Image 1 (cartoon, helix red, strand yellow):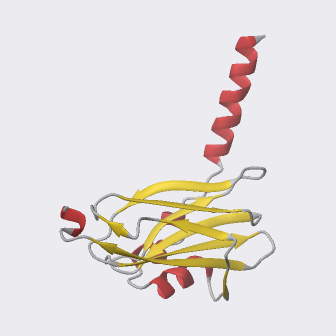
Image 2 (cartoon, rainbow, N blue to C red; image 1 turned 45 degrees about the vertical axis):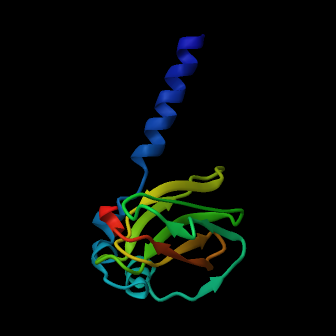
Length: 146
């Protein structure tokens, strides 16, 4: 019985990963956009962003190493996707996460930023609205090299 349960878990995991969207292939202009507004438009089309305290975006106020800045984004808003953008590197889009049905929207990762700037998180709600949060941060001398 234990072996069958593990097999079902493995099949379920394969099903979830196989259904993930490939945003780099589906929305290539979002990955080459130079500005945050252009990247958001390339990913989602013409939308209205609503600044929301329900989107929790965290990063250090001062990053000592621009090559590995810890970032977390979470929300209690029922979400389809969460996208993260930054405004100092040549390409603005950092990541797009799908939020599987029945899971909590809570992601942690590291990003590179070559100098001080801002990070923007966009939550695509299941209600059809788009929520955002912007966070400014300082990168210590050395940027991505640091």
